[in-house]
Structures are given as C-alpha cells and as structure tokens.
Length: 346
Length: 74
Image 1 (cartoon, rainbow over the protein chains, first blue to last red):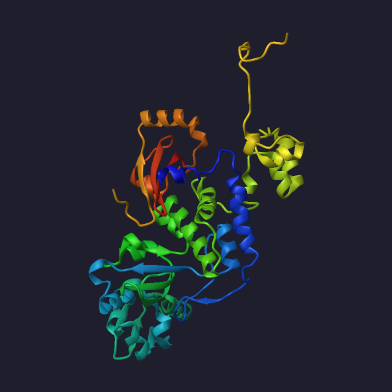
Image 2: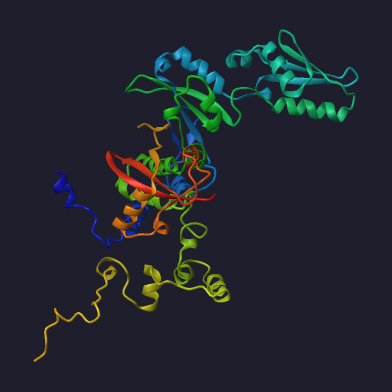
C-alpha cells in the first residue's frame, strides 16, 4: 500500500500552486453569487457562496456573519437542561432587551426602568439580579421592585442623568459581551446538544464552566488565530473553504485548499491573496509590476535600487528565460577540470 | 501527546542538533522556513525565543507529517 501510494507523490518541480489556483478558480465560476443559507435553524444566517469565498481568501479581519460553535463537556452534553443553563450564561442580554421604557426623575435624581416581564423570564433573570448588576457596573444605588428597577444618582445635572440612563440601557446585564443570540442545536448523529452563538468572544466563552474548550470553534479565522495560534488558523481557513465549497456541492481536493491555507499562513500571520497580501509582497520587482500598480513598483524599485533575484515564474517569462518549473527547475553543471566522462574527439 | 484544542497540532521546540541535521537533510537555511510569531499563543506556551525552530506534528485527514516554523519577533 505504502509503496503504491508513494508512486503518486507529487514530482519535483510540479507547479502545485498554479494547479491549486486553477482547481479552486474553475468551480468558483459556477458558484451562485449570493445564496442565503439557513443553517438548519431560524435566525442564524451565514454568508455563503462566492462572497464568503472572497472573504476567506482576502483574509478579512471580521467575517460578515461570525458564528461560534460551543460544544459541551462530556458529562452534560446530552442533558438539555444543563446545556440550556450554559446557553443562558452565554446569551448576551442588554438592558435595552428587557426594559420596556425608562423614566428619569430629574429633581429626585432617579431613573426608573420598567421591565418587560416576559423577556425577563425568557432570559432567566430577576429584577433583583439586575439591580445588583447595575450597582456593580455603575457604582450607584439601585432598588428592585416587582417589575421595575429604580436607580439613585448623586447629581441633579440633567445631562449627566440622561447620559447615564442611555449608557445603562446599552450595558450588558447577563451573558458574554460580543455574543448575540445563543441557540441550542442537537446533533442528529450523536444526539448531543451544542450551542450556536452569533458573534464571537472566544476568550470569555472558554471561561464558562462546562464548555468543551477542546472543540470550541468559530468561523472567524482571525479570532481562532488570536486564541489558538497560527496552526489552528490554518486549519480553520481550510475547513471554512472546504465548507463553503461543499455547501454548493463543489468538490475540490482538500490538498489544494490546505496548500492555499499554508501559503496564507506561512508568514506567521494570515495574509490575503492579492495586492496587499501575498501577491503584493513577492520578492521580485518584475513579478509585482506585472500584477498590479506597475508604475508604483517600478519607480520604487528604481529609487531604492532593488535587486530582482529572477527566481520566480513571472519575471522569467517577462525576460524570455526558461521558467524554474518542471524540467526547467533543474540545472546541469560540470565540475571544472573533470573531463573523464566526456568523449574525446579523435 | 495531546494539545489543548482539536485544531491545534502538537508544537515542540527543536534542539540545535536536530535543527542542524534538518537543514543538512533538506539543504535549506532557516530563512526558507515558514514563520511563527513569539506572540503566537502556542509559541508563548512553549516560551519560544526568536531564532528557535518549532516542530509541528500535523495531521491532515489522517496523513501525519512534520512541519517546521521559525520563531520570529512579533
């Protein structure tokens, strides 16, 4: 087996990068331009198709629709109630989500928040919890009633009171900042429950008890890079590329995608393919000038006395030399003075 | 050996002897290698210094191989 598979190894000098580019590019032309895909549930819409592919390849800092997959530790993953409790810890609840309206009383230095009891119940919070949270966040006195929270302030300044009220409305009461909705899903094969959350804040989610840190995953490549390092970013990138393509039933060999991911992560950080990424930072002046912004590159090269090592493909085609690919990548040289293998002319 | 995440392969700092034999075998210098920043979470965990080389035990779809990254400042 091993011997047989070794026969199919890539040959020396094979232009693997070009083959990878063509293998992804051709099916890319068949992709639907904009397709909205509902990942089995309502409310989480992920970008897919060509826009997503472009987003990945250009190494955008934030994806348009970041999504975090939170898996639960072995003990609790099949227990719906335990999973629900964790989801509640993650689900971001802002004051404005649970408050019906708020009324300022300027002369008495008070703000009264009227709570929406239905939303309150859905979030699993009580007015007392909210009052104590507000006290902690803003260092003010807060009183809890049945369905209202009254905050006492120190000042009569109307501007400050209004501003504090608005700031309180925007504050995160429970859950993790940066995460939107957390929805519980069930894996049909294994029967385990997991949480899909919009947005991401991996560092904070990891600290939640009961979350399986080993399988935490997000479609935001840069977030993965920051949390787990460049190697995980590479896998995430390849995985997302694969997912985007297979969603539209396009099959591209995984090695092409891994090669692209490898090239994008080889500098230690994630670089896009294009003017500001890989193509714009090539060694050769001529190769860069042949791609985009010709004049800029040539003038800069002339001004700084750059040297072109002539080791790539583009620059060699440009000057009419043999390209260093395939048989062109091998050079023959004779040891000076060694004429033992040369046939002598009679 | 198990890393701390599903998608993170095991990282390991190579000693100098290993590095020298690698360079000789592959006929390369350290500048030919892909890079990893010192600020990278995995490099931080190993407290790697610039100039060292990190060996990565990768597994791609069941295909196990080694990958090397040069530690650079960043």
